Image (cartoon, rainbow, N blue to C red):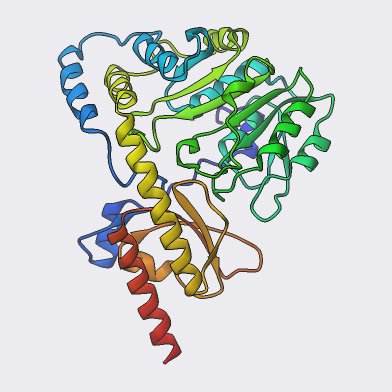
Length: 363
């Protein structure tokens, strides 16, 4: 005799987490591990963040600001957009959960790419909805096929731009045309967790579109370039009517006090953000170019990671030498993995051990 869980959960598997740093150290007898598996900022956080957290720690006995007023005020000034358009959450993933909770009824559909952030699908399934996945083309969203997949049952479409895990973006005019083609009664959810890393002229700034498209929801985060992954702060930018619905289903005090103080401080240090972006672009070009020389290809990335693939053994060598990457699958390739961009020293170490392995096999 046991208590049966909801039927919807039968189709869901827990989010896959890789080995911990301590597990790798013990397994391979090494002392140094380079964690390049979770798309974190290898340059850390702004020094202002640590100072803000220390000051906020004096008030741990009190509940945090339930409306995250300080962050909303800073975001409003940063983007020059009214405060009513912002919703701050426990990571941008919480907004995905709130959107599906508020808008997905049983048997409703949500359209998304086949290879993208898996929590879109998971949250749709939890609410009893159906995830309609569309195959990608060369690691990119096929927006034409996604538009064709929209039906009378469709409640929302997800576009991750840059896309996780491939790092690719959708061309500006193509994305504009897609947004314009989506019916007004279907939510367009633009997940832009990595937008600060994009430097291509083909990357579309969706913020100016909010007035024209009331069904547009933009997701962004402090976890990536701001370096606050452990504190879990994300935010959505949307029409005020959507924000009001999401407030009805969000948890009270969903963002803790230390995270709120850290996010405000992080926003104030845009010089740090710009410095990280410039370094990331340089390292992205360096590592992808050097990988190419070693017959390790990758999709054209506009994020802080590469989705790399090759028919030569790589992943085990990296792991044994303390380099953690996220193993992936790509038809036609022996090895495929997502690697977070680190520092130049990280990359030179990686290239050295991979080159040495390939040389030894050749001999």
